[in-house]
Amino acid sequence: MKIKVNGININYELTGPKGAPLVMLSHSLACSLVMWQPQMAVLESAFRVLRFDTRGHGDSDAPPGAYSLEQLAADAVGLLDALKIKTVHFVGLSMGGMIGQCLALNYSDRLKSLALCDTAAIMPAETQPIWQQRIDAAGETGMAGQVDETLERWFRPEFLQLNPPEVDMIRRQILATPPAGYIGCCEAIRRLNYLERLAAIGLPTLIMVGEEDPGTPVAASEAMHACISGSKLVILPEARHLSNIEQAEAFNTALMDFLA
Image: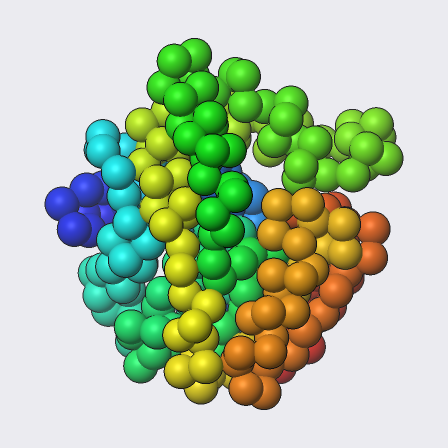
């Protein structure tokens, strides 16, 4: 379904038992709400689940220009307002976890808890040329050139060799991402700088990361864990960046234990 939020159409799905506590899921760069499919059955057993396509992704609008994490967080709050939802348990992976940090720092009254998965709180200066290369490539040749390199960062070689249907699902999502939306969100991510503010987060917080994640490594999660008082850190073995897919069962168990 689509609803007007902050001047654009945001695509969302709201499923699960009415009246149950609500979990909001926010996906990675170059993905969509479909990314959360491995979590849906277990979450819907106990929760109402709100998934949405971030600005520039999936079936949401992709206006041109640079986005900011503050703008993406305002979209999430705008979606809650439009749906008349007061508070949620927020689960974000990668870019979604960056949006979650922004929400926790600026709209903490809208969150019951926070799960930050395979994400980071600051973008090191040495990564800036990499982000510029990705932006330039997407602008010049579209998303096709991003697929192989992205899949290699997101999944271990052993998982890719098995070629499960989940990998093809992610491949299709990368290809379907509008270049303008990808570029807009890359501009937001490359400016990530929340680490020194994280001590202000007082919400129950789960931090989860794939042990072999090269993009947002364990050290990035450990840094967030050190800053957020009372946070819980879970490191998932045999997983890279999309740990919710590569180790879905372990991911789901840790998430459900936390939410309970």
